[in-house]
Amino acid sequence: MTLKGIVIVSLSTLTGMAIAFIANFYILEKILISDPCYYHNHKTNIIFDMFYNFPAHEGFHPYPTVFNFIFTIASGGLCGYVFSSKKLRKI
Image (cartoon, rainbow, N blue to C red; front, side, top):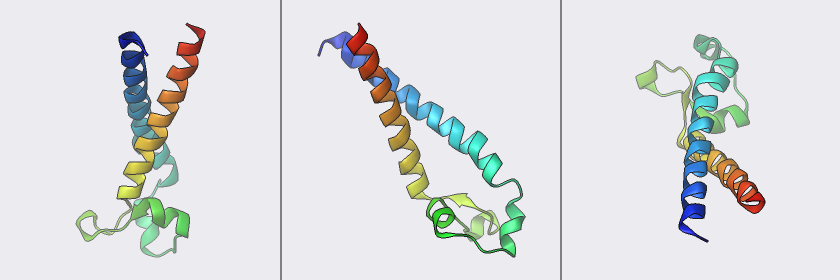
């Protein structure tokens, strides 16, 4: 792989990660957790608990877990890598 290809893959992967963060923390989280106080009196499911926990420093409101952070990085990086790989094949 040439230096140009490495730069394209790296920038695409970083761009994919940035887009995933924006989509997760500014769009998807606002849709999924419209009222954070709702969870004071209601139960959550196992999928929700994998991505959010309820720490005391947040007033027992949903807060992203480390798994959420890693999943966001991995999915964004993978999407960026796949996108750049497809683009490099066409070039």
